[in-house]
Amino acid sequence: MILGIISFLIILSLWEILVWLEWVNPFFTSSPSAIFVVFKEQIITGELFRNTYPSLFEFIVGFGLAVTVGVPLGIFSGWYKLIDYAIDPFVWFLYSSPLFGFYPIFIMILGLGKPTVIAITFLLTVIPILVNTASGIKNVSPLLVQVAHSFGARRSDFFFKIALPATVPMMMAGFRLGVGRALMGVVGSEMFGATAGLGASISYYGGLLKTANMLASLIMITILGVLLTQGITIVEGYFDSWRTHDIESGLENL
Image (tube, rainbow, N blue to C red; front, side):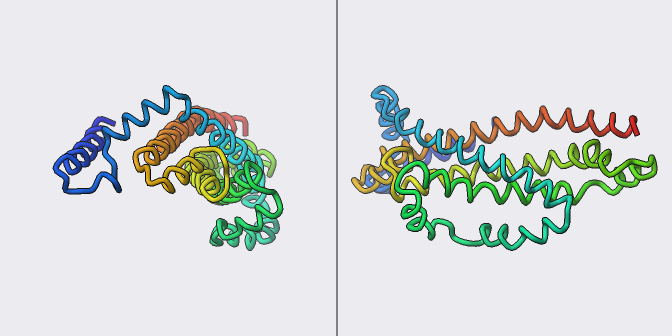
């Protein structure tokens, strides 16, 4: 953490020095000091929070729907090969297709605003969660499989006491990937046609060539991304202790 903070401060210092020496044009790059002033002003006026609330709401709904759909589908896909074969084409179509290219279609169906943003956020987020959860189920440690079978474990015992707890690390990795893709979906969708949110703020100030204001919203997105990712890490630590305990107690019960 200390090394990361030092590296970040060095980059900011170099940025500020380059602007001060007039080696770069602040009209295009702004400067850390100017961005800090704008950031402070937007906090005082409440503009920053007015832009953050819609984006955070859309993130929570889109990410929540992705978890609600992606985790069960991933579990069933990893456990039943027929389900895996059935949904695999759709999964890789959504993963590889440029979803923002379908933005006009979403607007025609759902209209401008939150529904379209949430829909794109959901589609961008659900795939990594689904794929990672399915991979966790498929790649349970062979040693655990052998131990469970040697103790005469039933299929349901193996699923609930071994496979499901063992997939937690991969599932959480999918959540971390999903956070980044969800934020990308929220901001990208808002930049195209939303009237509120951090993405709309970036688009608005970018059109006015107010670089400092634009970067202030971008920094707020970065802060949200760091906080949300750290939150996932905390949740992962909680579930990791549960996972270890559940697998050990499951083997003992077998």
